[in-house]
Image (cartoon, rainbow, N blue to C red; front, side, top):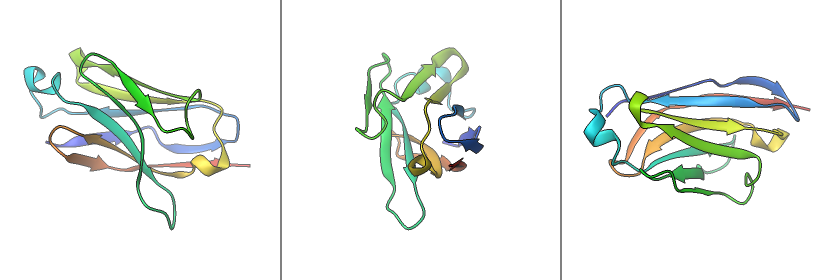
Length: 115
């Protein structure tokens, strides 16, 4: 499975950003069964789970992003999204999308939050 993440960039603290992740090689009937997730890895730190979303749209989030980040999926487009609001400097990291079901990773996209 090839996952393609995009949407990273430089944003000021308090700003918003939306990341996208496509799974173009997954057929629809397979994709809809996958639990998808976003992870991030800050410089010098271990990769951590940001949140995940099930096939039916049930989400969980890390405490550090609750109330600020939202994960959504559009099964018809085989896409997941990470809406990030009220960004903080400590959100700076490389963000990765991941299929929890097939354990596949996409290339990361860098998010840099400036003060």
